[in-house]
Length: 103
Image 1: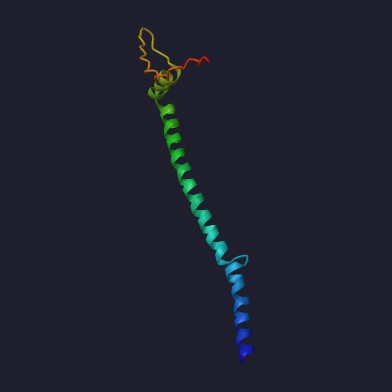
Image 2: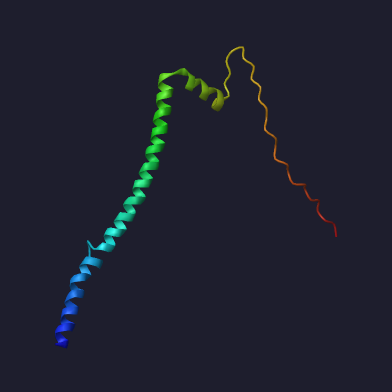
């Protein structure tokens, strides 16, 4: 009777091995599920970025306001007979320079 119990337990272990650790086992499924979640989040972030770029392209194609805005802020262009005044930001306060010590 004892050999029968040991034999059945060994058979159960042998049948469970492929289910848990085999090629298509639960551990692989859990790993693939985790990878899928990571890829979906990355795809969602890229879709948001693409939607923003698409809106910017549509603005540039349809109207001159977006082109003018880019020319003004990125290239510093001004219209004819327009005065451009630029107020510089305050420079960061520099740390005092230490003089070399004499010995």
